[in-house]
Every structure is written in C-alpha cells, then in structure tokens.
Amino acid sequence: MMRDLGSRDVAFMKAVKEIRAGLLELAQVNEKDFTTVLIQGSGTFAVEATIQTATPRQGGKLLILANGAYGSRIIKIADYLNIPRVVLEFPENEKAPLNDIEKLMAAHPDITMVTLVHCETSSGVINPIAQVGKLVREKLPQATYFVDAMSSFGGIPLNMDACNIDFLVSSANKCIEGTPGFSYTLARRSALAKCKGNSRSLSLDLFDQNAYMEQTGQFRFTPATHSMLSFHQALKELKLEGGPEARARRYQENRRVLRLGMAKLGFRELLDDSHEGYIITSFHFPKHPNFSFEKFYSKLNEKGYVIYPGKVTRADCFRIGSIGHLFPKDMQNVLVGIEKTLQEMDIAVPIQESK
Ligand SMILES: *Cc1c(COP(=O)(O)O)cnc(C)c1O
Image (cartoon, rainbow, N blue to C red):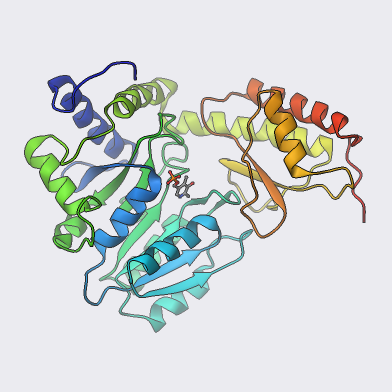
C-alpha cells in the first residue's frame, strides 16, 4: 500500500490483471464464462452499479429478499433508481423461506432479477444462496440472480456457477482483509453481455467498465491504486493461509471462542442454534439496570477493542465480528476486556438479568 504507482504503470496493470483472475479463482469459476468488474468506491457502489446495469430500462422488475439492514439498502437503491420491485421481507433472525419465495416467483413471472444477501451482516444470518439460486433457474429461467456476498466472500467457500449466481458483489476490506477503497462484481459473461446501455449512471456502469478494462487493461476513471496494491498482497496472504477453507476455519474458531466466553459472562445471542453463521454474532443487550450500550462501547474502545457502534436489528442487540486479521487469542483478549468493562459498570458476572 505504501507503493505509489500510477494507474497506467505496467506493474499496476499487471496487479489488476492478477486481482481479476484471483477473484474468479476464489469463486471457483473460469475466465471464459465469468469476468471480474472492479468498481471504485465502497461495497454499496458495486451493489448500485449491478442493479442498474442488470435491469433493463423498460420492463425491469426486481424480487428483493430482505431480512435486515443490507436487504433494506437494496430496496432503497431500487427506489432511487425508480425500478419496480416486489419485496419479500422475512424476520431478521430467520433464513430466506424457500416456500414463500417459490410462491412469489409463480405470482410474478415478469421478474427480471432476484436479489439476496448472503451473510446479512446486521444479524449474522447466512441465507441459503444455493437453494434460492436453484429456484431462480427453475421458476424464473429468464431472470438473473444477484447475491450480495459483501461480508462472506473469501471467508465462506462457494462455487458461484453451482449456486446459479449471475452477479456477485463484495468489497476489498471484509473477508479478504484488504484496505477500503474499491469493490467488485463478479459477473456471468452471458448475463453481462445483455446489459449494454442499461445503466442510468455513467460511472456506475458495469458493462462499460468491463468492456474498457478488457480492451485496454485500464480503468475508465482513476482507480484506488494504493488500495488495489494492498488487495493484491491480501490475496497472496489468503492463498498462503490455505484459501477460503482455511480462513473459514480460523473465523469459526474465533467465533467458537467468542460465543463460549460470552455465554459464560451471561450474554444471550439473537440467533438460535439452527444458524451456522460465523462472520458476525449478535448479542442481546443484557436486561440489567446498569447496562448502557454507549458506556459499554466507549469503555471497550478505551481498552483498544472496537465493536460495531450501533444496533441495526429491530431487537436491542450489539454485534461482534469474527472476521479480519483476528485470531483466537484476540477473541480471548476481547473477552477479558468485556469482563473488565462489566466490572467497571457495576454489573456482576455472570450477568443476572432482571425479569
Ligand atoms: C459491508 C456490507 C455492504 C457494503 O457496505 P459499504 O459500507 O458500502 O462497503 C453491503 N452489504 C453487506 C451485506 C455488507 O456487509
């Protein structure tokens, strides 16, 4: 990241080429049928680019499956773009309900794209992307399937083609552990080929971004060079660790340590044991007269532990992630920090909740 290369430097262009190929490898697909479109900006930029590029200006209609803040963001994007949408909202502590989805698909044969968030980061629920993909192909063969895999890609192994995914988005700074600055859409070439002229935006146009990159090896507009060089290194480190399977094992171990320790302290989780997610864990605010989340958060912060700063679920919950360059030892340390914080707040452990 400390290397300052120009965006047309040969060494930079080579790194970009390797990043594009490396991401397809992580998705277990080949360059003949799939392409990586790199987008300047955070993850939301790639979501917005994908939705407007993949939706025809006339006759486009989305089926949005939503069980949390990131599903709601897709609804908001569709509304900003004036794209007609059908929404299936389901509870934040449940996985996408296949029967209801199937019924909606039958009722709306004119849907052009189905969207689903893989790991709904507001709660930690992992949605069944493969099963929904199968339904899309069977029930809506003319529609495309879009998965927001922002917080899971690289940390939960997947085969994009086997899941019938046409467009998958993620960003530099989640499970691949790069620095923020850009995002990407992995696209099925046959689906992207139909998208010329769809985008309502000049810069957020996957079709043009991809066509220019493939012709010239360069970006249409200035890319985040430093972030991309650090990402190039992050991909190497992911490979050295043993790929997404090995990273998944580390994150699972992080989460195992965390949930064991939190249970000992008396915290309750939002999700029951039917959920297998290990990206992020939501805990209920303890029902104790001395507990205040703001205090808890800032006292932990003073000790060097930064957890997610606010609640995004309907239930009163806070969240702790297990992804990033974190190891089981770090999780043990944060547990010590949490125990100390509870002491400072005059909350005895294990926490005795009031009725
Ligand atoms: C982080 C995240 C995003 C994108 O967030 P940005 O702040 O725009 O990078 C989108 N969807 C999910 C599921 C996420 O976890």
